[in-house]
Length: 248
Ligand code: OAD
Image 1 (cartoon, protein in one colour):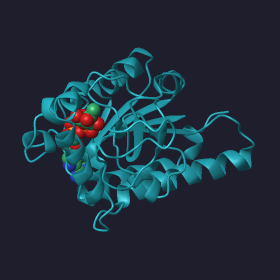
Image 2 (image 1 turned 30 degrees about the horizontal axis):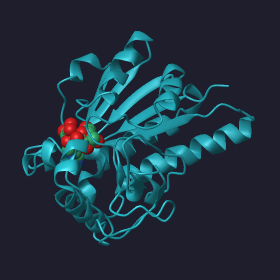
Image 3 (image 1 turned 45 degrees about the vertical axis):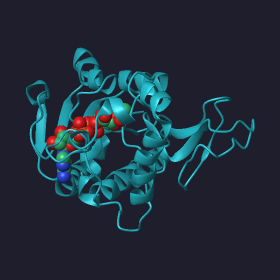
């Protein structure tokens, strides 16, 4: 089974900012002002506005999945067809993204694990109810479940909060035969630890990025170039030898 971890770099050519590149989001705003529970307590309007801007941008019509997202969807469907033909039960691909956009889904992927939540969902701080939300969020809004006012926030994981689906991720990491990271600096935990876990388990590792990251020397292989070119090339390579990566 192939374990794929994606980060902001895969969506860069779709028009979305990364975080830590020179022109990235964290060069324009401070993490402490917009992406922590403390920031939301101190200035909820500022935090809501930051995510409103990003949600609006994502839904603007200018932002579309690029060939990298589409290639991963193609990989998923090829693996799934191959498994069906061979009567195999175990999944052949696990795709986990740190991205809060929906470009993997729009690119055609059916199973995507969003470990940092989604920009297109809201959550109530009072009752933890989560629901799809495409408009701006304001303190006037009322939770549709518990009716609390001013408690709605984007359903994204902030710094100091626990990422989602950690058990599912760990199980898949422990069972994979190839670990691939795409367009991520690999600096944010726990995603940053997956490479070390894979290496400890002696699983082959591959980094796909526009340029080698600080951890590049730890990977068995690096494939460097814009995601829209490098990912489809890698996916073609895998599809041409699927029997190597889909186990019973
Ligand atoms: P980063 O901004 O840290 O890293 C983006 C990576 O994408 C870098 O390694 C770039 O070299 C690479 N990159 C840029 N353009 C690319 C392209 N066209 N093709 C391929 N690679 C490209 O973003 P993440 O690693 O995703 O979390 O950041 C992880 C987390 O930190 C985010 O989910 C977010 C952020 O703070 C929270 O907000 C909690």
